[in-house]
Structures are given as C-alpha cells and as structure tokens.
Image 1 (cartoon, helix red, strand yellow):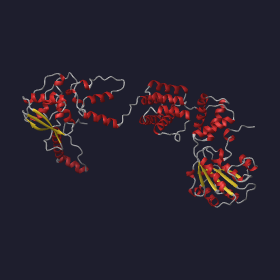
Image 2: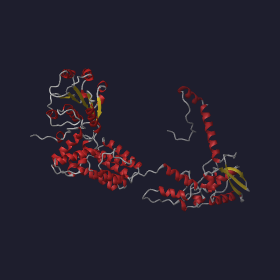
Image 3: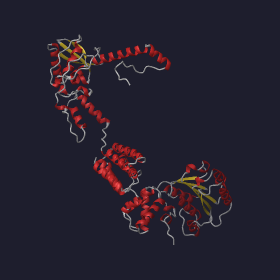
Image 4: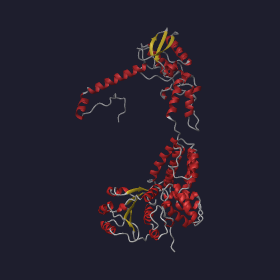
Amino acid sequence: MSYLVLARKWRPQTFSDLTGQGHVSQTLKNAIDSGRIAHAFLFTGARGVGKTSSARILAKALNCERGMSPEPCNQCPACLEITAGTAVDVLEIDGASNTGVDDIRELRENVKYLPSRLRYKVFIIDEVHMLSTSAFNALLKTLEEPPPHVKFIFATTEPHKVPITILSRCQRFDFKRIPLGQVVERLRFIVARERITISDEALTVVARKGDGSMRDSLSVLDQVLAFCGDQVRDEEVANLLGVVDRRLLLEASAAVFARDTASALGVAAKVDGFGYSMRQFCGELIDHFRNLMILAAVADPRDLLDLSEAELSALREQAAAVPLADLQRHLTILLRAEGEMAHSSYPRLLLELTLIKMATLAPVVPVDDLLERLRKIESAGGGGVAADARAQWRPAGGASSATPAASRPPEQQPAAGLSPSAARAPGQSPAPAQPVSEPPPPNAAARGGAAPEPRRTGDDWADFVAFAKGSKVRLGSLLEHGSPLAVTAERLEIGFPEGSFALTSLKDRDSLASLKELAARFFGAEPVVVLKPLAGGGGAPPNLLEKKRAESARREADLRQAAASHPAVSAVLDVFGGTIAEVVPLGSKEKV
C-alpha cells in the first residue's frame, strides 16, 4: 500500500477537528442546526488553513444518511464517499484548470438534474478567482437563484480578484492564519498517535516553518520524519530545515546589550561556520528584536507573538533590562542592513559591521533629563553643577585630559553659552586689548602675563568692558549683557534683566570681588559697584551687544541699499526678474 502523507491522513473530518477556525465552524454548525443554510458560500484565506476541508465537512453534514447534523458520522456510505472524493453528487472543480465559459455552461446544465443518491448536489470550486470574466458572468444567474437541491461552495486565496457581483451572492467566511501555539498543539496530538519522539522545541521550529498553515506544517513534519525517523533530535531539525537556532539569536542580542563586541563578532563567525545565510540570519534577528520590542511595549503580548512559553520567558529577561527606545534603534539598524545585504558582495562583513554598531550604540538620554540638567547649570551659575554634568557626559572608559571645572578659579571657568574660543589653553602669549568694535583678545591675566593697560576712546563703559575682557574673558563677556546706568570713578551702576544668567553669575562672591578689583584698576579709585536688576527694560540704555547688533543691522541695510541702487544690479534684476537674497561685502568671502 502506498504511503499517505500526514497532511492527507490527518485531514479534519469534522468541524471539531478544524484548528484555529472556531468562528467558521461554529457559524456553520449553528446554520445547520437552525436550518438557515445559504445556497452559496465563499471560503477565503491563506493556503493550508482548512478551506477545502471545511467545504467537504459541510458537504458531509448536509448529506449524511443519519440526517443533517453539525457533525457528520463519517461512517455512512455518503460520508465515506465524500471523504474519498468518489461521491457523484459532490463535484470538486479546479478553478485554475476550468476557467472557460464552456466549463461553466456544462456546470449549469448539470445543475438542472436532481442528485442521484444524496440529499443535495454540492459544487466545490477551488481557486475560484482563476475563472475568466465571461465564466463569472455565465455563473451569475444560476448562482443567484439555484435549484433548491444545489449548494455552491467557493474557495480562494485571493478574494479581491473575485467580482463583486459574485461576492454579493455568497456568504463569505474568512479563514485566519493558525496561531503557532495551536499548530504545535495539533502537531503534538498527531505525533503522539504516530508514536514519534520529538521535543516541543522541534515542533515549534516545524510549526514556525509552516507560517500559519497546518498543511505546510504537516508537510514539513513529514520531511523531518523522513530524515530523522521516529526519534527526532533538535539539532537534526535545525540542520535539515536550515533555520537559525534560537539560542544563537539570544546570544547575539545578549552580546549587543552587554556592549560586548568580541562576543557579537563571535556570533557572526558561528553563523558563517554553520553555513547559514547571512541575510536569513539578519531576517531572523529582525524578528527576534521585534519580539523583544513588543515584550517591552506590551504587558500581555500573547496575541501578538507566535512564541512558546519557554521562548517567552527567555525573551522577557532580556527585554526587561533594555529601554524601548534602544530596541527601536537596533531594529532600524537591522532593517537597513538587511536591505543592503541583498546587493552586497560581503554579507559577513556587513553583518559584523551591523553587530558592532549595535553593540557600541550610544545610550539615548531623554530630552526632559537634558532640560533638567540645563536648568540646574543655569540656576547654579555654571559652577559645580556644570562640572557634574560634564562628568556625566564623559565617554565611558575614556580619561579626560582637561582640568575639572570645579578645580579652576571662578574667573577661569567659561560661562555657559559662550563659544569654545572664549577659553584659551595656558601658555599663549598675551595680546593687547582691542577697541569695542573688534573681538577682544584672550585672557592675559589667566595666562600668567601682565594685565593690559586701559585704553581710552571716549566711551568709559565700552573702554571698561574691553579692559575687563582683556583681563578676565568670562567677566568681560558677562558685562557685555549689562546696561551702564552710572559710570564714574565714584559709582559704577550696571543694570541687567531681572533673573538673567549674567546677573546671577556676577553676584557670585568671587565674581563680584574680581569686578571691584578691575574697576579700581581702571578708574584709579574704588567706585561703589552696584548690580541692579531691571524689570521689562525700564528705559535703560542699550548694552554693548545690542549696540553691536544695531550697528550690524544698519551696516547691512546700507549695503543692501547701495547694491539695489547700483545700475548693473538693477539691470540684472530687471532682466531675470530676481530679488536680492544676500549682500556680502567685498573680500569677506573667498571667491569660488
């Protein structure tokens, strides 16, 4: 006797045997119980999920000699003939090979005659979407008003290709992909009856290879049994099916999360040694990190993941220790690498680069944390908190060669918001103080050189700020934000916006002492230094920064006006219908 494959041997014979299609079986059983049986059914869904099997079961339930019942007896001649496919009144037609209008005309002629033995004449048309348009049109009238002794059952994997006129005349049932757990449970039932020794892990691999199809899963199981016999080992299943061992995926993710590049590269070497496809492994790794992401994002992911309980428990341990944002970034890297592997001649190198990039990925700092650190720095005046923030941002494993900010004198610490050029390294030669309109020289006093002499241009406040900036860069930069309220040898009153960083920093004891010392040296006396908060401007004179901005805006407006009034520019604008986008003084930019 010839061998009968498992997919045919264990084909469902009753609605109770259907796996993963409870919504279909329950509806059909209720319809038979209540007598509300439609004349045409359309079964849709992926391959191997039970469409044709359900059609046969429905035909047996309608024609069982023991009477119409939700569960056929499978013992009477009618049930046995339908199961064997020899019943003359149950016609199974392949829509892919009977696509023409002549085939449908023959079917219409056959519909007129009463069934020879059974209660109903049942026409099962598989892959009905393959019929031609003319064939569908020839079927319309018969399908809408068939004789009472005829039932039509259509099955298709592509319902969108069936004309809407056919769909509207049928009761449609959508068959779902069978969940992994239910496939494994059914496979376990079958191997127990077949007296086969196989682990649940191997059955899970077989079921996952079936991709939600019971028929495909049974075909894969047949292949495994042909190779392994009745004693199936996990290693043999993995080698035969060419699937990636789940332990290798767990090892790869553990190496990435531990930032262990050596172990990550070791995983790539194992993949190459086992002969796995690098792109297939990358795809498996994408699914693995997707599972981790869902576990981190959802409290109960059972409906979203096709994983066994053992696999879920192993993944939960890893997902609990990794932020969700990091898992999303890892997935983005893997998706990009998988796309690049399709066109790469060096897939192993690309996989190694991907694993190293994932293992060395810098951790994400939430924006709220960054804003909180900035608030602390501003409220503390850039002192010890700034040093703490810099210490937190120092690269892991790297030693900083710069002197910690907390160990410097207050006047040597750069103010927050200043450019890096505001702080100079020790050993640079001092430069003389420049006028207000020019950038100030580096801090001569901080370099150990002689303090610059005050220069007089007629504007005492501008001269004092330039003098202060030549001695102490940070202090001079803060003074640029102040408005001169009184500048004399007896009283130096400076106004700042209320609550500003400059006002807070200058009120510091060391900064205020340095300011008094500079004022005494500049004026040749000891003026009273007053720092006054200004609410809403208060009519105070503009500070030096505002003067510089106003001067720059005026200069730019003059240049734009001069350019617009130039005859050559006007002619060009008229010819091309353009506008002046930018005006650059001659010599300020390199020629292209």
